[in-house]
Image 1 (cartoon, rainbow, N blue to C red):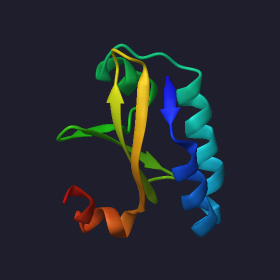
Image 2 (cartoon, helix red, strand yellow):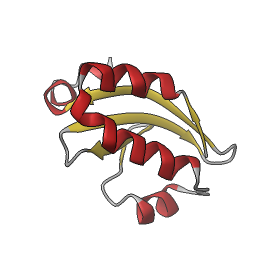
Image 3 (tube, rainbow, N blue to C red):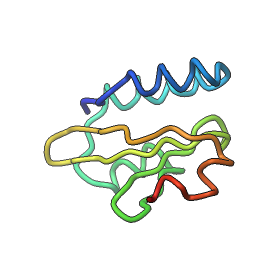
Length: 95
């Protein structure tokens, strides 16, 4: 899958250094995988959830949430946001 863009991950881990290892691991796994559907993705990432049109990944033991838009037919993953659990719980990202 082609992840767009790694810059969002870097900006987040600059503010939350303890997230870097988990985000790098997620990015590497996604960049080396091909998924044709959400079901295939869920087999590799059991904590991934479909929330409306977004695919949300729990990162770092649910400490962080990575919100993405995935176009399986084109092999592209767009990063919408990376949030702490507290910010995610406020649901401000849905607006």
